[in-house]
Image (cartoon, rainbow, N blue to C red):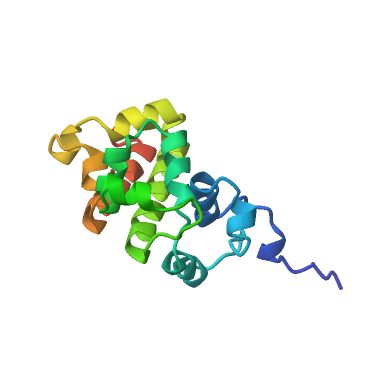
Length: 163
């Protein structure tokens, strides 16, 4: 009798989960600040991390890794630049700002995977697109529906519908 070993999906090295990619992007030392985020992290765990608050340092990391201005990011996060500056590096952002920062990171890392490099992504995020009714993707990302619209456009680009 020929017995085949069972395939265990957890043994496959399929790379980082999307949430791990996002946390790696927004956090300088993701292994230290969010050791609980692993390849097999579930949505409830990620939601708990967002609810606990992402460290303010993540804002600085995003500003360092992109050419997005502090004012542009502040608009996405629904926070003033003055309030942004008041936070200490290890302070945690409120859940609302943490969620918008996480979503910005999710869209940005997805765009990096599709468009190839930060310069192209920064340009793509900050210029109007016909498909969006001549709106700028970054300016739409201050609402959940805007984030969904930008994400849908990235899916269309990924599958060759738009460029």
